[in-house]
Image (cartoon, rainbow, N blue to C red):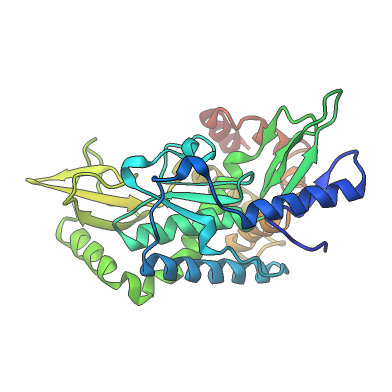
Length: 331
């Protein structure tokens, strides 16, 4: 394996190897230099507790890399940028547009996070974005008459060689969040989160039938944090009303994408009982592919289970998640 300077493992395209090495070194310089002019005044210093959480998450995600035969890839705290709540705008930091509370971008080699009053919420989003950071990444010089340097791979996401289309974004987010649920949850027992976990369990027990603003149940299996909203705002968390008090909750994200993934896993397991002892073994195929960049095992598994071209068709439906869900349900 070539020396790793950043999240990128390699550069694909019709240029000399020396040029590819130069590009990787330049991305390494971007990884090390985390100054963003547009972020001045918007970013705040991280608290000692946030620094401790980042260290915990860094080690936990490195442990996952080792599980899949990869070397440690340490993400220093300087690559995680905490943005003041009133200043939150990913594009101001030169990051992709996003309406959530955290975003990772290959190009600046950075994670930007909206500040959070709850440590456990900060940890969950740090875990998800750091998984993106540490999963397989590659650049490409696009094909065609006007070649450009663009993204090629990020986890399960594949960009076409002409750079015009990408596939498997929904699948990539689903696998990343399912891994976060499984492995970030192991950190919930850390003393850092003890009081917030206690408060969450207390509220769920006290108000088991609480309803959200929309009339549905306030607490679901995905809820991992709940509190009385003292500020009336709370990052991404949606305000909830109960009596005269307003409660807020934080839940694991990408429910629609995860539902599609889990339906796919269920169907694969049902049709390959001799190959897998349980559904977690099927899930592991997706995890390993995301971390290592080798998606051939997923392609073979899905196409052999259903029919040739099934994985590609799933990827082609990324822009219409309802259509994607209906297709997977029909398999």
